[in-house]
Image (cartoon, rainbow, N blue to C red; front, side):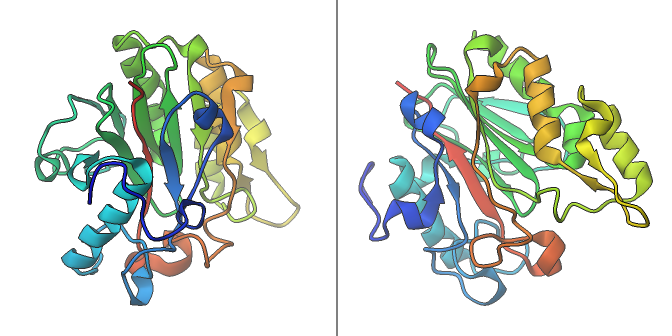
Length: 267
């Protein structure tokens, strides 16, 4: 497949996009579970091997994503995610099979021939671009990583490549929304403590377990770090509610596939 070659699928049926990132010139996608070749519980656009999908299927799914992003399949990068805060700065010419063994939850590059990616099945994902330098970052932000400070780590890594928070554009992708993100009281308190918005991110109803608005936590953290609220886009969808479009670990358990969220630095 040549760089920039279109896949047979309409990209709109394969991935969701952010108007803010589009206007800033960043190729990107919050990929759906549709448009790939995997079968069974991984149907159809799955991006992980360690839950049982066939390697040849995942490789073909990577080609689908590469066609949408306009990069070579071997230039889509993601890490072994550990719900931590480590951010990896890549040149964009590394061996992806080596990079995927590195532990971390944010990928950054300035190479316009490479895609920074993260994989998820309920966790929050952020795609970040700097219109001035062209640098881009993909962030995996589950609740544990969000509490640990992965957003601050990613913004700090962007600053290290001279991308200032005030000029960043950010899109927050589909994830488990407040309607389905039921947690125990201790987890609710821990998440609220990590948010500049405090208890406003926790939804309580009499006699029921609390629910948490992870999207609100991520926005509050970004704004506190200097990102303009008007520069934050919301690409919505609840991964638990919408089984046709999204994989969900909470809904489907260990056999769930994983979605890809990726962004290409701008030349």
